[in-house]
Amino acid sequence: MIVRRHWALSWLLVALLSATTNSPGKIGPAAALAQAEEGGGTATLLFISVLPGHALTPPVAQVRQAGERALDETARRAGRAPVDAALVLALQQSHRVRTALGLTSEFLDALRTQTGAASVLVGQLFLYHERLALAARALRTDDGVLVWADAAETAAPTPDQDWGETIARLAANLDGWQPTPAAALRPGESLLVLPARASGLEPAEGELLTACLLGELLACGRGEVLDPGLLAGQLQALGRGTTALDATACEAIRRAFGPAPLLVPEIICWDTVERSPALPLPEERGPALRPPERSIMLTLRTVDTSALVVLNRREVYRGTTPSTGWFGVQRSVSPLARYREATVELLAQDPDRQGKETR
Amino acid sequence: MKPSRSLPALLICLALLPGCAPRATTFVNQNVDFGRIRRCAVLPMRNLSQDQGAAERVQSVFLTELLRAGRGLQIVEPGETNAALRELRLNTAEPIQPARLVELGRRLGADGIFGGAVLEYGVEQGGRDRVTLVTAEFDLSETETGSLIWKTEIQGKGTSLWRKLFGGEPASLYAVTRDIARQALETLF
Image (tube, rainbow over all chains, first blue to last red; front, side, top):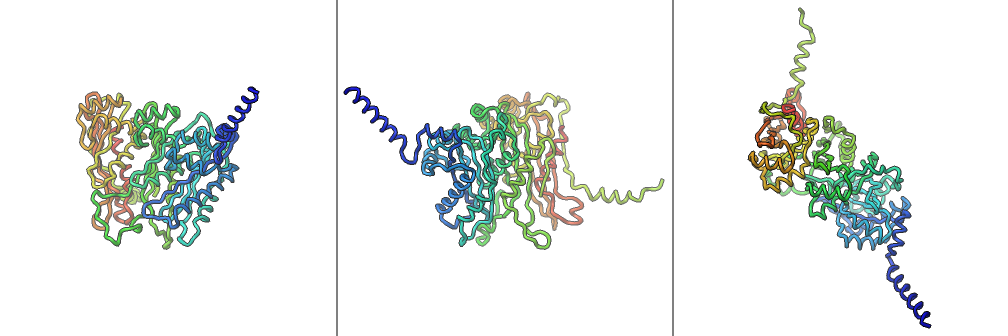
């Protein structure tokens, strides 16, 4: 009789435990880990950047919904099932992940153990100069290594056009995300990349440059590229920004990610800014004043985090081109196309040779 | 000996082709063994021009050219240099005293410290002509005594006789800046 009571109590405890761990929308850590190891699901995250002087015509929630749908579809095309979005959002809020380059190791761990996501698909929608761009990247949740990155852009929809359809078309234009086989990534040759710093430009332009750079680094196959968000998160934990790359910051990076070379990208605006500019007349204010194209310089320096020295530095300059070409042909080069082209040139450059200017 | 017919054409070409090559005034301390300087830091440049971003741009280009020209020279990561400046409470808006340069050199483990200032930077309107103009000075101090061992003041213009005669856009500020940085470093290496 006593023995029977003990058995009953044990079954009750087991039933209670399983009820708490298998609550709806959340799978148990063991099951989540098993799913992650099997190549399980994908968590999708979407961020929206609207540059000053521009505005989204439809409500943000509507655009967000369309973007998330497009990302889920991209994940499905890659054979990955999107994990529970509500749970991902809850984790995003609890880990205070506010930007696309703000993913931390702890957040990735939480995603892996609590949702079973083996990878994260991060999308960024940019609205600027009447263009809409979508930059997306996928990374593994177990080590934060990037497996895919690409960006696409199109003309921003007019108020009467369907934003959802345009965003879906943008996502479809991304090079298909195929899970990169482990053999294609060269383990041991890892690259650490910091988010690009934008000087004299909007921070979103730095994010756009980072997206282009990551895509090109993966396309070059120069080794395993760690997500820049992890490095930024590591520096943030020290109470430092990505620009304060001193001995303490380098030591923290080296301890967390190893002695790999650190790539530091920057984008510097070369448009002249007077110290005391004349105030614009009222009729001159507004987006019309904003030039569609600016003179920019992209730089990429490689830092040895052990010796605290700059190993090499590459730079590419892009001046403005006249908006009207021969025979009155109107030219419009989008920022994404410029960054992408300049990034290709930057990475192809031999740092020991003379730099070149392209107008 | 009969002069070649192509000589006048060659002379005309020579007169038209070169742009306004940067003009430099340089001081080099000949009593210093430059071979001993292996590790250097580059300070943020002082900005005496009207353009807010001039110093950052010129310093950025100078750093790239320095890494290209100075074979074997180690350049301290600028983030570490800035941290040392903050730590020692040094103000780079004014020239740094030699004793403080010694202190800075010791803190960074640097044998030399590059500095400089942007004196003029922008586009000059001369009649119908628009001319890009950059004037800067660059210097190097050794960190044993903090004394100046190299200094050059250089001016570059983005115009040429060809442009003056036949018109066209002046060279970009980037091109002029890169040229002056290269010319300045040629007086050192």
